[in-house]
Amino acid sequence: MVDEYKTTLSEVFRDVLMRYAFMFGEECEKEDLLPDSLGYLHVHVAFNGYKQGCIGILAPDELCVEMAANVLGTDMEDDNCADDAKDALEELANVVCGQFLTGAFGDEPIFNLSPPSIANAGELNWVEISENDDSLAFMVEDTPTLVYLKMEQEVEE
Amino acid sequence: MSYNILIVDDSRTTRTVISKTLNLAGVPISQLLEAENGKIALKILEDNWIDLVLADINMPEMDGVEMVDRMSRDGLLKTIPVVIVSTEGSQTRIEEMRAKGVKAYVRKPFTPELIKNLVEDILGEKNGG
Image (cartoon, rainbow over all chains, first blue to last red):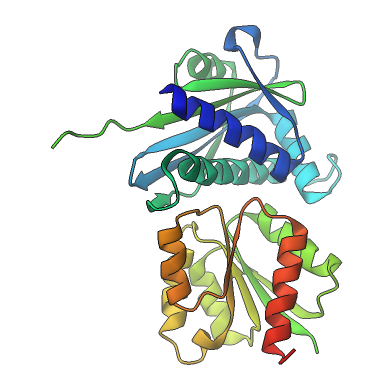
């Protein structure tokens, strides 16, 4: 990932996290973070149009539950908390993607965003994503979280 | 006077947040209806009198762009004010949607105050206020 995109993605992620979920995130070195959760959620949003690619987030289950509770103003013990957690993370990824695209490319180009795709993930996914140069690491409310951007290569005409 | 409002968004979280915002803001509401995409929204619009639509753009099955396009081609539906609430930031697309009759645009993440003020302005205007 080029440095300019990294800077924009980091700023956008922290800003959206604060305004959407009332949570604070701090970028840190990937090497300093160790996966310490039993389960994770992995969401990604693909985009096409002026540029093509996708943005993804890998976050521990417990962080997503807390995020949903913050956004909805509900209790983390609610019966629907697992579904709410997935939905809250999907919406976070959707908003981060939209804000990143205008932050990186301005407000003239048109992009089409796919609906977020979410799945349960584990420690292997964490290792795979964290080893990739496209990913950034954050401590979100003392919880390790990964965010990545994959840009499709442009075909020279 | 109270209003029928339709919230169209594939995110249940966002629908809930908007719904709570409207209720807390004291907007007089008869019915608060929800749809998870444009296709379901059009069906609801066929069967119910709606005073205001708050809609996302990026949704599965039928997105907000197509929904607004279809509403703009219907003699009755094109009179219903639509507010877009989306992460979409392209001015080009926003201008296109305004040209099709979209009343206002709110970018996610939004503050409850912004939604409240906008809804009150539009419904006040509609009511001759």
